[in-house]
Structure formats: C-alpha cells, structure tokens
Length: 537
Image 1 (cartoon, helix red, strand yellow):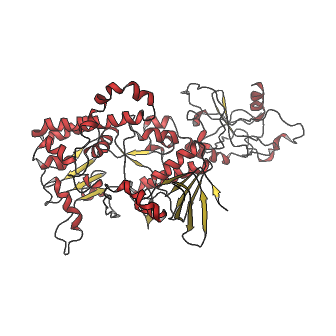
Image 2 (cartoon, rainbow, N blue to C red):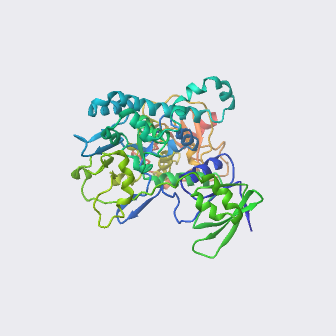
Image 3 (cartoon, helix red, strand yellow):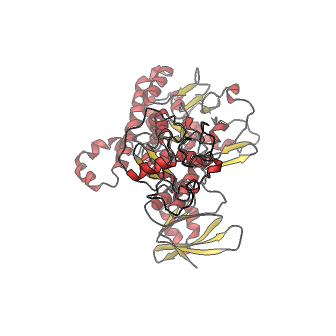
C-alpha cells in the first residue's frame, strides 16, 4: 500500500538532509531514501581498525554573523547541539618558488599582512585582492539576508547597482583573469593565494572568480571549523531532527523510478538493495540529492531530454583522490605543523599548471608528482564530544544535550535521598554567580533539546510537579516523585513524567553522610519541604 508524504528526498547527503530537516521542522511529513546502508553521503566517517577516517568534509568555513549558512544552522539548533573546533590558520603552502613556506592565517587583515610580508613587491595588489573577495562575500550575504523580502528589493532598487557592484563587476571574470590583472606575470603570489584551487577545479582559466572568492573570504572572516566527532555527527544530528519531527529516514532503499503525472512528479518507486521489496511512495514535492544524470535515469524515457537540457552548458565537477594514512607518531615529527598543508611540486611553476595535474596519475611510469593537500586530523576529534571544544562564551551556554546527559546520570541518586526524612539532609554547593532570571516559561522537554540554555547545572534541583499528595498513596517513604523538574531560580521546567524515583525508608543513608548525585543534583530540602514549597506556588 502506498504511503503519502508532503515531500520525498532522494539521497541523504548534507543537501538532502538539510532540506528535509527544514521541511520537517516546519511541520511537513518528510521521507528520505538512501540506497547505501549509511546516511550522510560524503559527510561520513568510516573506520579501518583503530583509525577513524573522515570521508570528505574536513572543514567548514565561516559560521560568523554574516555567513549565509548560520541562519540555517540556528533554525535547526545545530549551532547549539554540535561543537565546532577552530582549526586555526587557513593553510600552509610549500613550493620551491618560495623562500620559506607561506602560512595563510585566520582573519582578512592578518592574511593581508602575512602576504605583504612574504611578497612585499605586490603589496598594492594584495590589498586589492583581499578587499575584492571580502566585497564579494558581503554582497552575497546581503542577497541571502533579503532573498525573501520583496519589499526590501523594491525599496532599495535605486541603490542596488552600487550595493551589488562587486558581483556585477566580476560576474564574467575568471580566477586567472583577476589574478593576472592584480599581479601580472608573478606566479609565486598566485600559487600562494590559490593553492587550494584543486578543491574546486583543475583549470583556473574556467573557474569563475566569484565562486572562488566566496569560500576564500568565508574561511578568512569566519575561520575554518571541524565538527567534533566527524562529519558523521552532523549527518546523524540532521537525521535525528527529521525523525523527532515525525519524518522517516530509510537506508538500503534505491529509487528506481520517479512517478510522473503529466508534467509533474507525484512520487517514487524504490526497491530494497538486499531484498526483493518494491514500494511506491507518493508526494507532490521531490528533492533530488544526486547528480543530474542519476536523477534523469529515474525519469521516464520521454522526460529525460527536457530535464537534462538545463545542464547542457555545465561541465561535471572534478574528482579528487583521497588517501588516509594512520601514523603511530605525531605528524609534527614529519614536519606537518598546520591543519592543512599544500605541497606544490617543483614542476608546478604556474597557476595554469594545475590543468596538467589530473593526467599525472595516468602516467606510466609516473615521472612527476601531482600537487598534494595534507590534512592533519587527530584521533581525539572523532571521539565523544567534549565541552573543551566549545569557546568560553559557548561554555556559559551549555547545550541542552549536555544537560540531558547530566539528568540521565541522576538515575544514580543515593538510596533514601527522597525519603522525606527531617534529620538527614544534604548541603548544596551552589555557586553564588547565578544567572539572572529569564522570562518565565514552562517547556515540555520530553524532547530533551527544548531545555532552556540558561538552566545550568549549578542552578538545578529536583522538585516535584504534583499538585497534591493522594491520601491513600501508602507510606510516604514509598511515594514516588512522578516528575523530574529543573528549577532555575523560580522557574519550573518539567522533565519526562515517566521518570519515577521511589525510595524506601530502609534504603535511606545514614544521617550526616555526604550524598552526591553524579556531580549534578544535590538536595538540601526534604521531600516534605519541597512539596510544601511547590504548594505555596
């Protein structure tokens, strides 16, 4: 029997998962189908023995206030849920053309100063280059901020040519054209500034300057970041958002046919990759997170030409070879001092030489090495997320997931902590530096991520949410507290009502014993006084 959804996503790469998560958060019923057994596409981490290997997403640029990605991350709560590790300098470049390795630091001013110090003869062109890429990024950020605000575009129409001039000026310019205009025939400075060209293309003569300038400026302004736990943590978080919102995510399901009704898609037919199980799912919206040629093969024969016509003037992207090497010694012992290092061989003396690099792997016997891009990944970055990965400011706003783990540790409450004894009380060690009160609100945190950020460990105490005690509930030592609440200053945040804590009097600790609750919850009031305090409210 066919199921109906509001939208179906084909493929579970970051693009498909992000789109599906946004739709799910908006209240739409979403289905994600992935032909592999793992989700995430290139944003995955696989293991080989004790090695945890990042498949592709080694670094995320930006995450500053003007980054167009930030509103999406905030809308999904990922900026709070996942810690991002700052990787430091953008990259180090080594080439026989340089007197010493060139390090591109974080920050536009710092990068400009470093480039001028290494190439003083091109100080004017260097200043213009960094101003140019920054202006392009600001123009793109302005368009992204107001992309859905039609009134803003109408109101500011007279000034738009001036505001968007960086994009208008370079809309047809290629990377090699702009660099030649700024630096002439000096290839050393070009290689220093565009050493990571192979991430985008192998031909600077066809690479649009705007598409190169946007990520370069984003890295310099916002920095480079790595997701603690690997890119798989990002994919898993998006999947959790979809499922928590009522969506479905299925692995091992390969879409065979896109069902079409006239000129519109109406659903998909998909098959299990390891079994003969064929299903049809219906939806008015289909999201394709796959190459256009792959999606075209799913369409009926008479629809493929029209679909591919819009991609006729576009070239397929290049392929990158990635080799993961596990070291038993620190990479510093081998001279790798930065997170990202570009090693340019001696034969590469011009920026246009990148065009020859792709064919080198096919030479037999190999006579020249291609340009190499080294990434230094420490194994602890794949481990459990740690608070130390967050900035000092972020640590003051602990993610709700950290509080979730702390509440789970509260299952280790000492026996008798809630027995209501007058003579046996634990003394709290609460910090005096309390956060100021926030607006009162009761939050249902069965979805644990909804816990307010300002509810900190030191401000938490157990408190019953029962309005009254049933007279026939039996002995008071056996009464369970039916709700675990988080009380920060005078606010009550209710926890999962299924979490029941009942302690008998015979299990009560001896008076005067110091009781700890996993370093998180401590009690200074008996259950009777806590109940009385609640009833007064």
